[in-house]
Image (cartoon, rainbow, N blue to C red; front, top):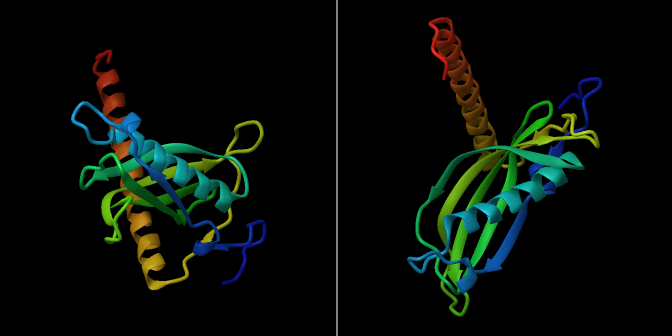
Length: 178
């Protein structure tokens, strides 16, 4: 891969990949006795933030969360593993993919996937302004697929934002004050 002048050297996917593990306790539960979705979302954001910081080499902030899917309930006593990696990078933004797995803390059965999410982080400097991030270098066919899918999600995010802004401008021109 040829480096473009002024562009930071790329980093392989594995350089920032991380897993955060946590045992769920009664403090994490909702009124139904399962773990709050918000508790899982915080773990997802924490793991994704670690990946974004590692990949960018500094501070990064959550810009958006896409497609948080809860596939199965998490219970007290589950050992939750939150696996995250950088799927795609732009100039200052990164998409971090996250898989959430759970297993019983005292059993030797395989962990099952209980959730997934995609988050977009922006790398920021000490003044909170966006800063350049290194390109991510997919290492495997799976990493390459994730990179391509991330580009599709980015295109959809931008198109959705553009369509919403156009609608708001149209409504404002028609005299609506929403």
